Image (cartoon, rainbow, N blue to C red; front, side):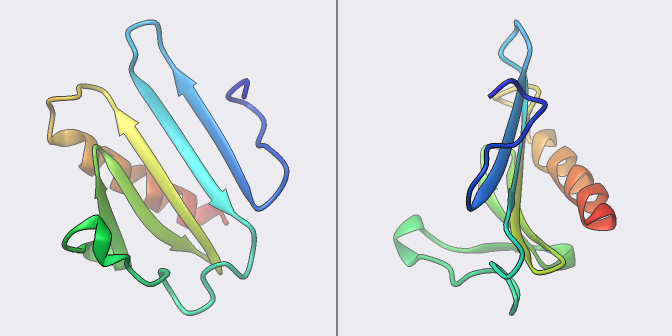
Length: 100
């Protein structure tokens, strides 16, 4: 993907990556994919870690959230060793929620 246009289908996913391998990925599913909130957690993924605002941490700077009735996620990678990426992902998720 060129990072500026979503892929057609069930999800619209865009990724922006720098030469230093820093990246932002936004995944927005179709309406109706999260009518009753976040999808059920798969225990095979380990313990579920819920965040404020009804969000879920997926690790590696990735956060799952609901925007309207859409199941969405964002991942921010500014430093693979940083714990700040998750907070940056939460901040970006809040912006997306306010616009969908």
